[in-house]
Amino acid sequence: MFWLYGGGLNGGSIFGGCDGHRLAATQDVVFVAANYRLGKLGFLYGADDSAPGNAGLSDQIMALRWIRDNIQAFGGDRDRVTVFGQSAGSRSISALIVSPESKGLFRRVILESGSYMHWKQRGSQTTSEALQEAQTIARQLNCTVHDNHNNTNNKQWLDCLRKRKPTEFSKYHKEFTFPLDGTSFLPLPVQQAFESGKYTKGLDIMAGVTLNEGSMLAMGGYPLLSKNITESDFLKLVAEVDTTYHGLNVNRVADHYLTGVDRKSPEALRLAFFDFFGDLHVKCPAYMFSRQYARLAHNSSQQQNVYFYELTYERKNGCPQGMGVCHGSDVEFVFGVPLTSHDSVYTQLDRDFSSDIMKMWTNFAKNGKPDTTGTWPELLSRDSPDHMKIKDLNAHNKTRVLVDVFKNSCDTFWHDYYL
Image (tube, rainbow, N blue to C red; front, side):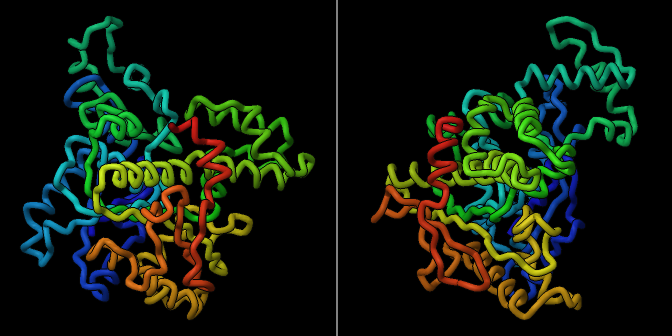
């Protein structure tokens, strides 16, 4: 099981609390994790082979190749590699699935809260925009960039940037960085890769989200939310989101997410924005990616499994107050933190739930199925191809299945945005 940590492709490391020793010690799996370059050091685009725009993702490929060539010496099976990751790690995995450079390096994937599926007409940045941004950074760091339309001087300003201290790039930190389409690593966006069949087929996929994905992410990315916002502020915030995500109809978003909402209540408006941002940034990309993969598999009679979940269990003293089952709530259960922590915040129910989650994740890695009881249906089953079934992950009810839970959001409101 190869782990990719989250952090918006801007932060994080293998020492960030995702310790795989519990999985390895109790579940009979070999755990591997690797650091990868982040921020501008990992994703700066220079229209040059030495600055291809997705260097951080190439680091992940290098780690997977190392696993393929060496894992047998550690008791691992090179033919049963499962890549799993959360947030930006999950987004990375979806990019690996549609990258021509990853063929044959893994058999199964677990996507926890994210994919890099975006607006069907363009990504967050085009290559020309990414190059312009990189050159602006170079000028600000006193690296000479000649204003011409050829790339003959790229080596000079890129080499100049490489002589700068890594800390000098911190001022260009963004809350979220996205994989860059139109590059050798990612020639096509997800939708076009799926349509043309240029993606890794035959994978078993388990994906999912938390109930309140947008709460902490939105608070971290949009400081205005810490104040008593008005309806006008809500519209301004959606417009601000559009500068990164593109293609949003501000009034249409407001009509959808403010229906039935007390527009005079700052808290109600804040929660509505959390729902909007969670759907756009995490839930619908993860769900639409998995749904499309499952549809293509069924249409071609491929026999892999695609499962989906929503974590609805709100642990006492878990996320900050008011954040619900926030982004990242799953991670501590996946890594068995409640089992070995002496912190009294964890209850016996938390520990039992963590044991269940660890077993599901490792069952999937070993066999392509998260459980053996039949309580977790495939996302898109052959007996009911028009209904999407997902597993409700909740310590209080271990058998509940949710049907068409994203029908009014991802399948309806956001459908034309993504597809």
